Length: 339
Image (tube, rainbow, N blue to C red; front, side, top):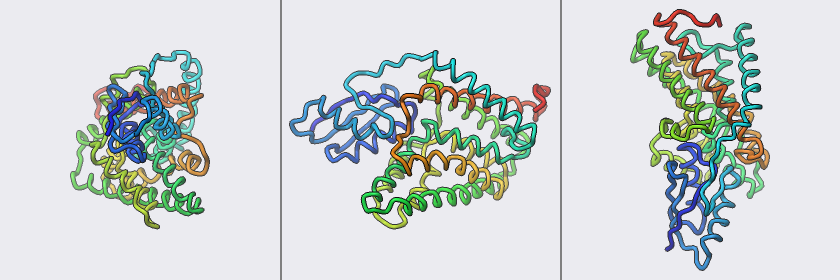
């Protein structure tokens, strides 16, 4: 048995840690792998024979490259590309303006403690599907695609995966909403739920900008051991495995999903909570389907910098408006905006 420590290029959050460990542990030469977000390194144990450290890095990097990561002997030089904001900022402002227009028309609504508008949940799902937080879900999609494609069955397993995901988000989202009714949240409790959603989304947006490395530590996630066990289900060889994996995605480490789950809890309604989570999952469907029915990786390195910064600015926009509206609703501050 040999032990090597490598640098992982492209790690952003705890979902990246879970994905890195699970993908490397599936490699035939690797017995165990432990990744660390703080150092962006992974320690691998295995029987690599007479392969040099450089050859092992190249071998393992091939496993991670489809997901947008790279295993290397050198530390990733992370400099902030401020030039990306020259494109990201106007695109984000344009998106925000478009969103406000839709808000005026009554098609979408900012996430507040008031009336829920499912157009917003769809928008957030769309943003989540192209963020680093969805790396684990994307890896499951690619895993389902690759495993069943070998057997000549490309379409059915992926359809079952998405059916399982949508049904699970509807039923479990409804259960969370119903649970909220048991607690009978008053104005203060509802405000706290909305406030938590805003803070979680604010942290997600800051992380997407990739400007403040310290913000990674603030991002909430499930315990790693639980996420790892859930991902082990992809190794089951059964007709209904894709459905089970679709259900599992409800519990995987994605800050966007968790923020929407908190909001579903604050609704205190089975139907509203179910629809919030269902529409959110529906918003993630286009990009994830594109991943599974094509050879695209999770992240396109040529445009990821601009794209993630744009998404980050938009998410911060949602978070700040939700935060302000929360304070307005409890009467702490007067209305700041008329939309």
